[in-house]
Length: 248
Image 1 (cartoon, helix red, strand yellow):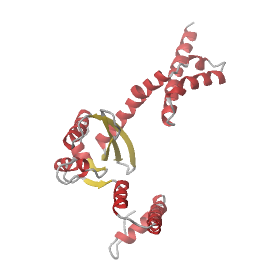
Image 2: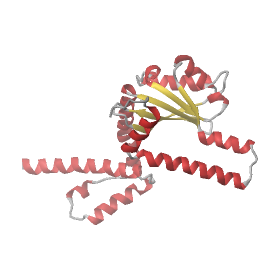
Image 3: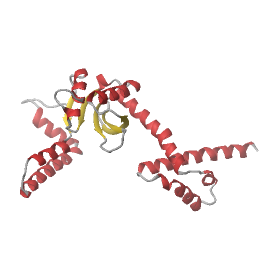
Image 4: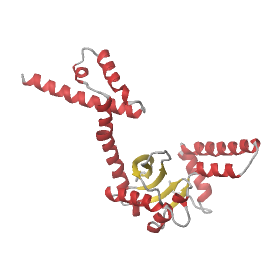
């Protein structure tokens, strides 16, 4: 009797873990929540003799709840822990829809202690006031709430070239610079190229030349990215003084 009860309990636990994996599958592949119930029925149809499949219960509402309240919350906690212990750069962009409440998207590029770099979506912040002071207040409020030491760990900032973001007098950039003088900043390259294109009327031939230059730059980056030997050889050639060798 005890063995039967224990097996039943184990089956329920495995089924719950399966539901979480199903929800993660939906999120990972950017699928609609509406497929949750169909996915559940398909698994039961494929495995009609499975006790675990019988225990699966997944609907659109449940899938969303798992992603938002379970896996999503855990992922956010993991990212926050990385931001607390590693240097990072902040990417900021404001939504441009017509709704009353807009959102400020925060993306971070984290430089880990093992020298690996990772881009992660951090959060969406609801905003009503789109001024630089209001945006700055919301971002700092989030950092303080999550105990993220942004003054010491935040080393980079980027956004589009809007005045509220990158203005010289009063902007999100200047407000961050006041607190973090060493902050490295860069405007979004795509927005900058778009502004250049709009201000400079050029021919199709010039467009082709610029495109080829950009392609060559990307190919050069790919050429060196996956080869430690090439990286070391070229760094040695460019950086070493005469008669000195760089340590491996």
